[in-house]
Image 1 (cartoon, one colour):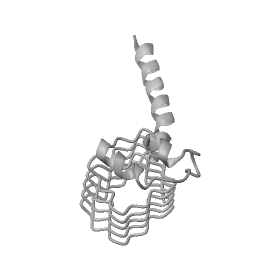
Image 2 (cartoon, one colour):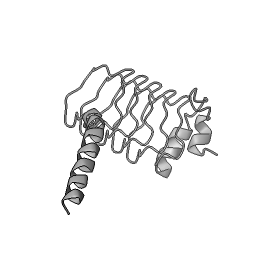
Image 3 (tube, helix red, strand yellow):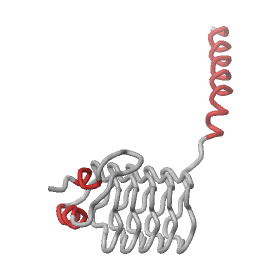
Length: 162
C-alpha cells in the first residue's frame, strides 16, 4: 500500500518537473481591445491570436505582420497598411477598412462579414475560403487582380470571381 503511494508521488513529481518548463513558455495572447492605437507601427511583428476588437487602428502599419487567428472585430482600420500581412483564420468582421492597403495579404479562412472595403487595395491578396457575403464578393471582384507572392493564388480565383 505504501509503495503504491510512494510510486504515485514519484511519478507525480516527475510529470510536474518535466511539464514545468513547457508551462513557463506559455503566454497569454496580447490584448489591445478598445485601445487607441492610431499610427502605431506593428510591421513585421508576430501577433498571432492578438486581440484588437473595438480598437481605433487608423493609419496603423501591420505590413508583413503575422496576424493569424487575431481578433480585429468591430475596429476602425481606415487607411491601415496590411501589405503582405498574414490574416489567416483572423476575425475581421464589422471592420471599416476604407482606404486600407491589403495588397499581397493572406486572408485565408478569414471572417470578413460586414467589413467595409471602400477604396481598398486588394491587388495580389489571397481570400481563399474567406467568409464574405455576395455583395462584398461582387465589390471585391470589380477591383481584384494579381497573384499572391506567398501562396501563388490569383486574387480573382480566391474570391471565386466570374
